[in-house]
Length: 305
Ligand code: C5P
Image (cartoon, rainbow, N blue to C red):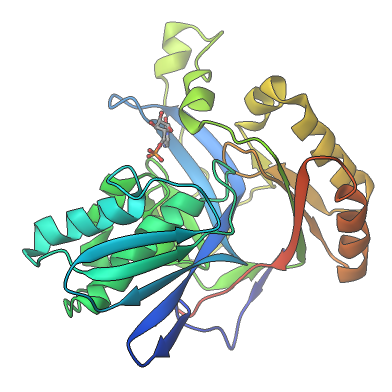
């Protein structure tokens, strides 16, 4: 299921130009997502395996006296409700540097799509402004800021394949990547993560609600893979709210996917195919369904030096 990558690049992907630089802001899927229990801070204790994909937004950074954010491709707010602006405010607050620089976000990833688009943009803003403002902080120093931005953000400081515990924000970066061709099916509606997590305890006793289960893999186990099979504990809740998503999952399996899952809390469902050709046939078929967008791409491995 995983291949170690001998020639992987370091993270993130950057293109330089005369007055600035462009950083790819990638999507993720969760190859495995287990809810271990409810925490006293209201969040849920998770164990997950994040996988970066080739599918990306783009963030361009240019030097400018004033701070500005422009967005192409989506109608999104450009105030502190946007994780890019929040990231700039937080980094400025902690570093003492004045907020400056012009940022252009080219949005391609779905909103509320379960592929981490907003979280990725927030984390890439931290990496980009760290560079633009000449801070040169180690990534580890940005982790607490990313955790404050959102539970999925710390992963996007590392990319590639990573195991995560805690709220999904305690990251152990890995060097492999998931094999195969990914087919991602995104419907024309999003899913609110908080609503899905809010439904987890329903039907459980107080004792069951408060139990925290052990993860399959501890941080100390090293690089050996846990014995897990692809699964997502949020699937049943989300499939009950949106039965169409279960249908997408089943169709991917019928069309030859090795495994197919909801990513995060949805709304994107993905299938992984051993054969690129079979993947493309399945994508073609699914793209005929009204109101869905289908993306074909591969997973990315990162060097960890
Ligand atoms: O951290 P973020 O704002 O992305 O999380 C969105 C919502 O998802 C949280 O407000 C919480 O309700 C839920 N969540 C959770 N446990 C997690 C991650 C998210 O309950 N580990």
